[in-house]
Amino acid sequence: MSPEVQRPVPPYLQICQHYRDLIRSGELRDGSRLPSARQLVAQWHVAHATAAKVLATLRAEGLVTTTSGGAGGTLVSVRDVGQSPRDRVLSVRRWGRIYPPGEHARIVAAELVDAPEHIAAALGIESGSLVVRRHRVTYRDETPVSASTSWYAGELAELAPGLLSTDRLKQGTPGYIEQQTGRVARQGRDQFTAALADAAIAADLRVAEHSPVLIGRNWYRDADGEVLEYGEYVSTPERWQTYEYELG
Image (cartoon, rainbow, N blue to C red):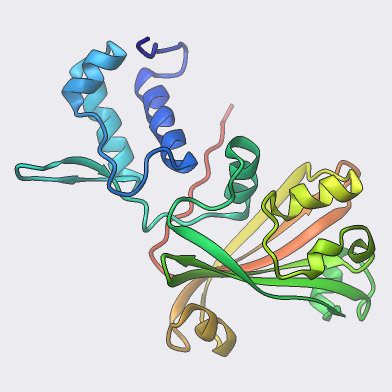
C-alpha cells in the first residue's frame, strides 16, 4: 500500500519526517539509498518540486549526501550527526534502542562518590552527600565521538543497584530507574556551550588538549519536579545536534 500525505503539515515536511524516523530508528543505515525525486513523486503522489525539496532538506540537515556517477544518488550519511540526551531518551521510547547503528557506548566507571559542590547543587542535595557517578564513552565504530557522566542521588543505589554496574542498561538509565522505582522522567532541560578540551576530555576523546569541543549539561525531572538525573557530556567538533519544536 502506498504511503499517503496527511494535512495540514506541509507535504514535504511529512515526507522528511518519514525518512528522519527511518534513519534514526536504524532501518536506514549509513550508505542506504533513498528514493530519487522521480521515485518520491510516484510513491507519495506529490509534485516533482515537492520531492526535490524533500531531498534538499534532508541534505541541509546533514542526514543524506548526494553522489554522482553511475552509482550516484542520495545516500544516508549520519556520521556527523550527534545525539543529545533528549535524542537518547526518545530513541529508547520509540524504537527500543539508545544508539544509532554504528555507535555504541562503554561504561568506564560506575561508583558512589562524595558529591562535588556543583553536582550537589544540580541535584538539589547537600554538598558532600554520596552520589552515583556513571561515566561512559560513546564510539562511532571504534572512534570516540562523545563522553558523558550521569549523576544520581546516592539513595537510588539501593533501589536501583544496576546504576553501580558497568554493564550497559539496555532500557537506558531513565527507563531502568522507572522500572526499579516507579519514578518517571517527565521533563528535561539541556544546555550547551563551546569549550576547550581539558586533560580528561582529551583522554576520553583521543584529541589534543585545548581542542575545541561542544560541552553540555542536562537535567531530567520527575512529575514532582525532583531531579532524577543530572548529566554532563562532551562531543567532538562537527557533530550536529538537532531539536525540533513547535512555535505557536
